[in-house]
Length: 354
Ligand SMILES: Nc1ncnc2c1ncn2[C@@H]1O[C@H](COP(=O)(O)OP(=O)(O)O)[C@@H](O)[C@H]1O
Ligand SMILES: [Mg+2]
Image (tube, rainbow, N blue to C red; front, side):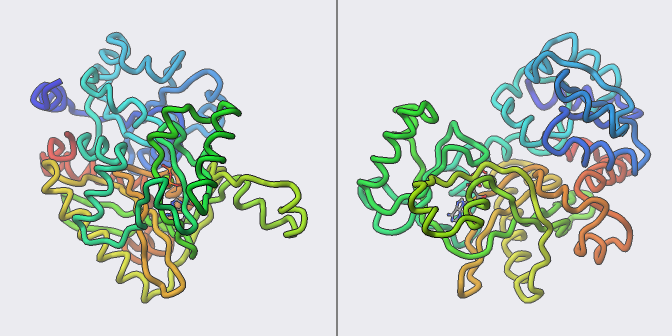
């Protein structure tokens, strides 16, 4: 799909509706649109419908058998007819590879969303932004605590810790035997130095309309058994031979020590600057830097998401930061809708879509 074809669709929009897949941070996005007086559409599966029916933030619910149905011609025509603007999130991004088949306009920069799906590209983006990253290892090089990640196991499941090459191969073999990862995955393992410190996930917003970077919310993750293991005494931990995993089950709000904000903001500014060199028009809307502050309060960035992250849900209706900045309730979903409205007023909606 050529960008010009999508812009053609947008140019006919008069009453934009905010649409999103019913998953991930949809409640955030839909509530935000309603707070800004926009109509909303939620595309969800039968099994999640209860969520969107019970919170009442979707003016319209379109039921899909599967999220991939979004690409169906009929659904797309219906959405375009309704003047829907799709807001991407983590679940949506699983279909990003198929964006060529999508004619419905998507908020944000799809090239950057593709970059975030690729660990090598992510790494280049962050390195070019002069950020400190955890070191990457080949299996034979492992000489300290590392975290092993797999492409197919997003969301933290199947990730594990290792301390030596032997340890890596032994644990990989076990995961293959248990069917959690494939042999192919072992070859593609992404091995990273494990940074011990406090995990801080920063949701920013880049506004092309106002040309500014905004800190919207900060969270930390609540990750399945890695967060549960601390409740078991060391003796039992050792006997039970627990393998920690990082499956996300929730998020907590975080307020950073004020002096650390300088590092966080500088990082966000450079990431935005580099994004403009990666693909026109550069960053649009929410993005997240996933970081660890070590014992010297050094900030390591281990991941970037070029879209809204579920952690920003802790910022509804506001986080300390969005409140300081806006003086009114403001959160990622609402900020997206506000940007869309401002862009419509200035006839620059096209610049939010690529
Ligand atoms: N280099 C690292 N040092 C310490 N913890 C890490 C590191 N990389 C990842 N983690 C932990 O593992 C989790 C999942 O890793 P992440 O790279 O964010 O994968 P995903 O693509 O699944 O989001 C993180 O939220 C964090 O708790
Ligand atoms: Mg992550």
